Image 1 (cartoon, helix red, strand yellow):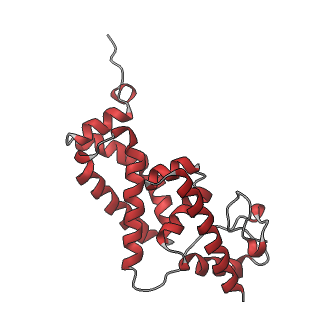
Image 2 (tube, rainbow, N blue to C red):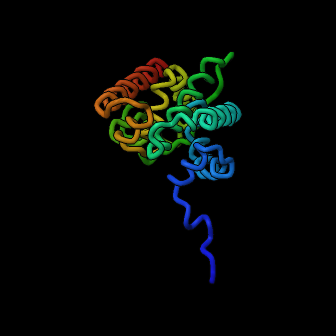
Image 3 (cartoon, rainbow, N blue to C red):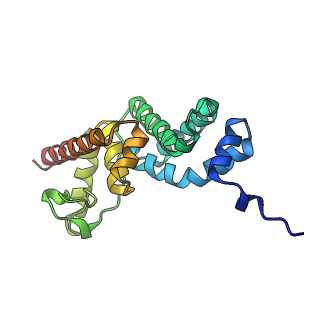
Length: 197
């Protein structure tokens, strides 16, 4: 009789349950599946790959330590995302000097002043000829935002997450997430305007 591969039979909820009981292999499988997305999120928030890797590592250590206390295993993703955002906040607080934030310019979504999208597109795109100056201005403007504003903009515009998922990740009501996202967009707009003066 041919046995089915273990990975085909094991659900994510099973892995969370086993990891909560101290199964390091189950936790490694959970962490490995999320590592690329966590790294992208942290890099977008922090703007520095090295700091992002440190924040992800810090978050994964916290997830492992706190996993036995997780009350709702079905919400593991949102819970782990919240821990990652908090690790990014701590990294920003520890930052001694300003760093350049690298972000790819996407000219196809430019529809607002200074390249700031006023629609649902990524709020960072501009024309090619002005891309170097605008990228620098955007980096400086983004650095002016606090960690919560950065996290909201990254999750919604770079990761295309719906508001309900963002709200669950941050542990806030959907209406609050929507109003905070609006405020973060306004803050970025104002910061960009200051940079272009």
